Amino acid sequence: MAGKMSHKKFREMNDHLRKGGVLIICPAGKLANWSLSGLQEHKWNPGFLQLCYEK
Image (cartoon, rainbow, N blue to C red):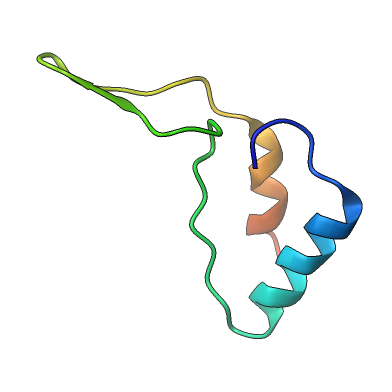
């Protein structure tokens, strides 16, 4: 889901959720990095929040 998402892909994901499906989302578009000081998150893309709200 990195970068821009097409409207078609967004609709497919919404349909999947409405049918009771599950999505695993990395809000930054990639996994966090592990270092000796702990996990280092990348900047999150706020667009993923659109999937969290039921219409």
